[in-house]
Image 1 (cartoon, helix red, strand yellow):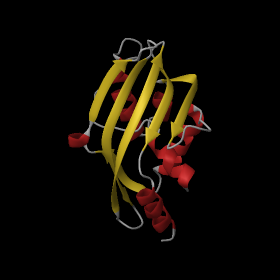
Image 2: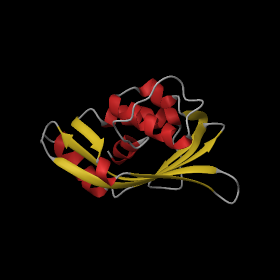
Image 3: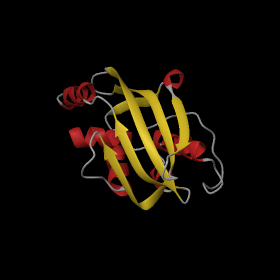
Image 4: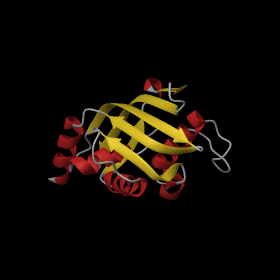
Length: 160
């Protein structure tokens, strides 16, 4: 259940960003927003298009990275028990920077909210995610959030 929930945040996720066309010429901040929109809309192939095929995705750990395929499959499964999920727009902050090694990063802060179909329970989870880009693609992602509240809510919904 923990692994299922952690993959929920593969591209941790925003909503309401209009996107058109391909990804190539977008600024990296816009790529993160568009990828998150794809997550919210359940457009899993589009979401995959923002990642390098060899990207490493870490959730609440610095070990045992997921591949984009694994993380997105987990996200797809994780949203099944939810009647709705999104990031609170008022809580979102998206920043970009280039580190001393010349790597381009986007940092996201926000509060994810989801409501379970079985229990109607709504949970809110503060989230922090960092994305490193190379060649216009996400090559590394690190997501952190307190997962105990969500884990308990998923377990409760599974017992209904």
